Length: 114
Picture 1 (cartoon, helix red, strand yellow):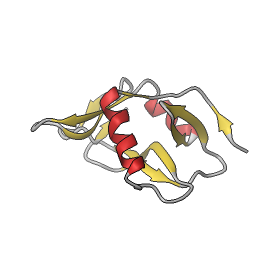
Picture 2 (tube, helix red, strand yellow):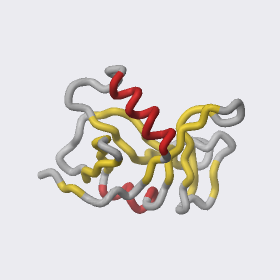
Picture 3 (cartoon, one colour):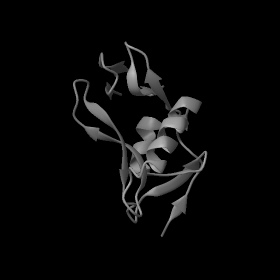
């Protein structure tokens, strides 16, 4: 059963533009949506997940700027209030995560501790 929730994370305008570019470039396979989440690992303990994936029955569903997203309910504890940006500078290129729940972040910004 699909459970639709209010978006627990936000995307900046540049992140939305990059995600829409990926969507129109045919990046996701048929039926895939954007998965936002966490997994164990990385230099600070947990790593971010931001990838196109097939929805699972226990996922929470939400939409941001017309982009369909899913997240495991347990991941909201770690990610609620996080902002995802798209950087194009020399010092920060790719998706950037600003997580108010992180007590420590690694130098590259792709992993964190709570």
